[in-house]
Length: 92
Image 1 (tube, one colour):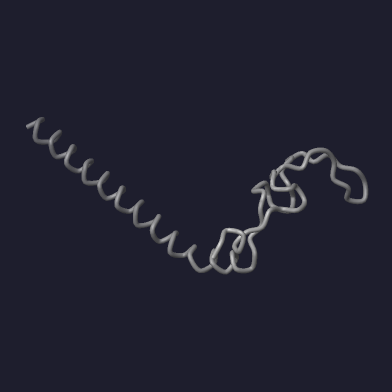
Image 2 (cartoon, rainbow, N blue to C red; image 1 turned 45 degrees about the horizontal axis):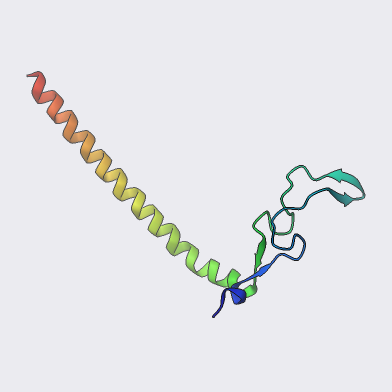
């Protein structure tokens, strides 16, 4: 499997992610965001295979991130408890 199987260069912005100038929607309007409306500024669009892989792996990535956040939160809470115990014992 190659990267080209998963994503394709955006044909609207030629992979720049940027569309300068004006958009025409009935009347001429300034493109205030300046990002390509077709790829949202990424410069590529996922293929059907890319979309399916994204949907498959995204829940696992979310779980991994949540686990790391929980680990760091637990370590932080333990440090706070330890420091507060030291503070209380030093005041006695």
